[in-house]
Length: 381
Image (cartoon, rainbow, N blue to C red; front, side, top):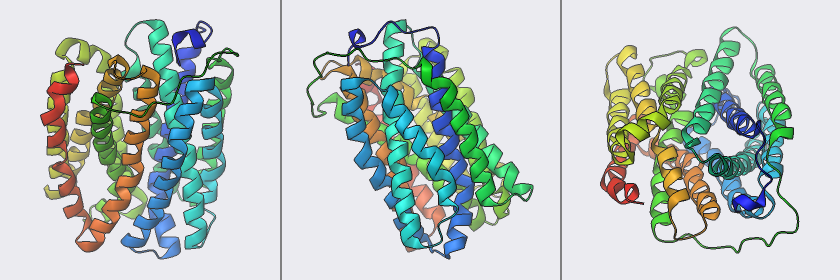
């Protein structure tokens, strides 16, 4: 998908992109505080929950490459609305189903909706950024984080005030629908009659960027899906407030991304990748090993601050590389990267079943060394 595939972006195109990121982040984060309720309703073990989360990941992985190709051919608007509509419908459904098979099916569809909107909004954001000819990706991803703050905060507050899981999920779905309805007419529209770009398999530097993005998203997925349960395992918070760690993580990430475009311009991509990865590593260790609630919460903040601009820097590198068309490269990186946030937590469930969640989180910290060792190669793109 080239810049010529679209009419010149309207004044509201960037705002619509931010709303899409906000809506997706809100709905995904709203699921995090609800996970313990779904687990308790079914009486599922850690291993069983891991299998259920794997259903979510499979749905996403199936939807992502299809979405990337369709978005490259026809524009991302329709796929953003399709994925967002799925999230609105399915979030309350997750709190209604009461069998393992039904929850697995609902999570499969929820994952497909997440995969669809995630890929499409990144392709759309890359087009808006290219048309504007200035860095915007960190700002777009900041709205994902702001949505995460709002989603986790709203769900935690509603649950703490005694509202049930289903009414809370229904309220979250309504807010998501409102944001997407306002954004819908402002998305860029593809011009008809253009030759669709050929499908190109990712290769070279695109594969490296995709792998690094998957690692970062795996860490984010661990905080999203297992952060609340880690707090319960360590007996640091009650169930209704167990999502506080993810909330703090999201706040730190949002602040970091709001400052991200300036930070990258000042420090450079190499330093952002190096120091960000080391902060994530330190934060994971602190979250798991630090005594007491205060220091453990500080670990969540460090992970959020360190991870904040890793993904925007990687997406920008995917847009700059010349191994394959930029839009298709971004779609490939998004597909592989978001597979990490959805498939990785399922593997953590199995690791936790073999040992415990603390050991599984410590194992994640070693993955950040891969980004440290690869930062120089990515920064040279």
